[in-house]
Length: 152
Image (cartoon, rainbow, N blue to C red; front, side, top):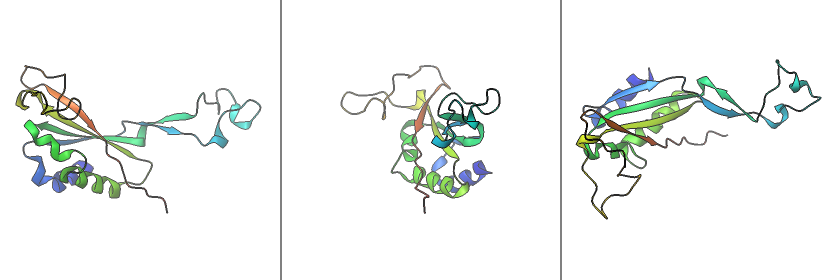
């Protein structure tokens, strides 16, 4: 359902790229300090309530949004402070309540991306060391998808 909504909202920005949403990619969630395992406490029964650490893995806590293949500089519209990124963030903010986290991955087709020139591109921003001369290979770029603060 989210993928269909993203396709509609991003119709003008997608071009030939596709949107895929992988649910249940999981995230680490902090445990309230009052619930931490301590010897002699009700939260310390081995095999029942004891947990090693201060976080637990929550499989339903995250989903991954992948967009690609993107050709040339087309990926930039989905980076922070650009229209595509803003639309994705607005939709995900209103789509599901906390504690769900969304990860945005852009798949940039290597053969269609221009080579870097000294002083014109920046490593990690618009230049990667993973370029391949094999057609169909893409570089996966993780883009931060910060959500707005929902506290009252």
